[in-house]
Amino acid sequence: MVNYVRDKYSKIITLRIPKDLDDVLTEICREFGYSSKSEFVREAVEDYIKYLSSLMSDDEGLEVIDFVQTHKVIMI
Image 1: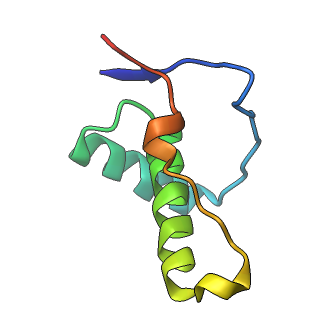
Image 2 (image 1 turned 30 degrees about the vertical axis):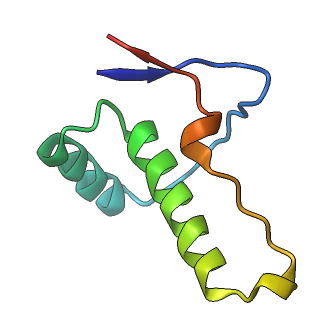
């Protein structure tokens, strides 16, 4: 299991989703071994940001850092 350590570079946000979508999210997390819905959402947001940045040309000014290197992770 992987737990992200809260640090000064992390921000807690609130996300509301419809019950039907939550049911799907719960099943996906169980099926693919995510330790939490938060872990799945973090990964999905990071992947989508990387995808969008790949569609933009270099001169449009979106700088995307490598999120994997910025997370402090503890393996349990």
